[in-house]
Length: 481
Image 1 (cartoon, rainbow, N blue to C red):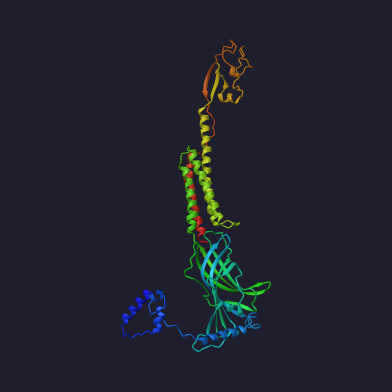
Image 2: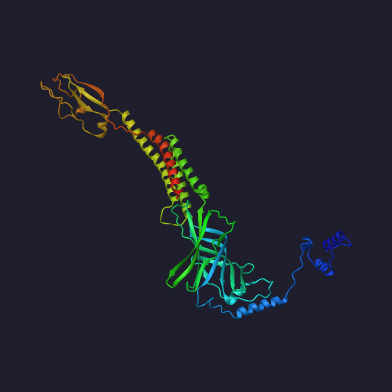
């Protein structure tokens, strides 16, 4: 109250006692009864209200009552004549919740319908007054309205906070406009062959539920009947284009007029680059580290191989969990599958290296244990081969390369194994000089053409080269689809 008094005193002092602007006592009382917030806006903004015309209100009420009384909401306009033409516009407020799993999207819009009902024509109340009447939603229950619905909707609802978000306008010629705010979740079948480098075309269909083309024909109001608000932004998609068409569909109950508007969405790949493509590529690169480790570091190389395989498997599982279970292969499946193949091949590469190392060590041991072959040499320069240590281990009987028979009266015992032959076993009358010598026979081993070091060297070049070529081919194909 103190603030009001101060403001009044300041005003009176500023204008003086002989001010040109004079406020009557009623106006001062009205100002003093206002709140502090109203006074802060100043007196210059306070425009006296338009005089209230009670007669005009009564005339409008009588007009509405007469329209309702003479109107049968059960019958469409021009019943039995030409079909009623309903023009439609849509103002898109928001587009959200585009889901690949449920194959749908949610749209919030102002749906406006225009039609003419000559039964609602009236005479203007005053010449200087507007010829349009804006009435409440209750009037809708008393006049005929089109039974418009969305054939491809999954669910929809009206907005009623703080009141029903709709209005009705009627002019003196019977032209009616109805505006409703709706939120519609519509079906949108998606083709995910190129996911996540895909573009989706989602439709919103408008049609009469019960009236065929003999009663109602829908038209888009003008070439810009569908307008998307400039503040509409999507997180995972970009709206590239939208267009609308008119068509007639044939059902078992008749032919119906249908309006369809299409929205072309292009998926933003930034999320998948950060969450899928880059991590998968880094996992593949990490699996190549084992190619530069020592071949004897078994634990380190096996740990890297197994860890990268399990990590790639987890990434594939978590990515596919948020996608629909389609029966065809997506582009993302191809990328993750190739990454998994490379990681798994890196693990198998060390298995191959370990196998070659084992064979190499076994071959080296056999060469180290060279065969010692024993011979008995006679005076006639003939020799008897007794065998080797390897043949003894195998339990093979030693073969005779030369029969130690002496034809000049002395014969060596034939029943005695050659291993037991010694100068004491020959008959004293043989007279043949026998001596034991050692010679080394070459071991005939199979030479391996590929060494473990060569496998690692080849993998250091082949794996990165293959992955780079795959990246070039992948992005060249799917980025331009």
